[in-house]
Image (tube, rainbow, N blue to C red; front, side, top):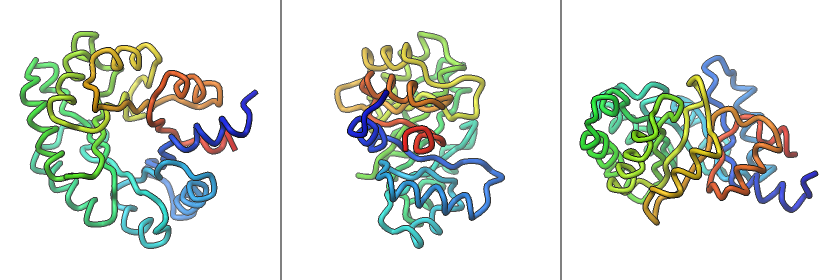
Length: 217
């Protein structure tokens, strides 16, 4: 049984997430109010909702997604999406990589794109979503190097829209191969207090979850 102190510590690392394309404003308001009440790290919302959240919940740190969920937009489009999100009030960007480049073995292109988006972010936080369920072990290792070389702030396991999500094994692998300045965000399929606690104990710096508040409050 989690004590209150640990629950709060875990919640402080949660990106409280609402990316359901069918969500209505009432659901958005609920998630934001929960993020304020339970002091989550951020609220992570769809790009179209960023300006609304920033206007109505100015105390929140707003995160949004770019190239989501498949990552196959051009770099120019991703840079534009990023600039637009930042202008609308986002402070953190979760970027989906182009997995076609990964499968072609063109890791230089992956690094170049991440760096191009980080250039737009400047000092704002950039998290790079690699979608672990679609990767080989070697690809995961190479992507750790890409994220590090491109000077992104986080490597993130999953979109939550793929066929699989975060695993403790992947977190351990990332920890071994990322650079010292790169942090880890676990996301996708985390639905119980026990799972959130396990990833917290594994040392992840952020946890992406839509039900984190519900299972911990």
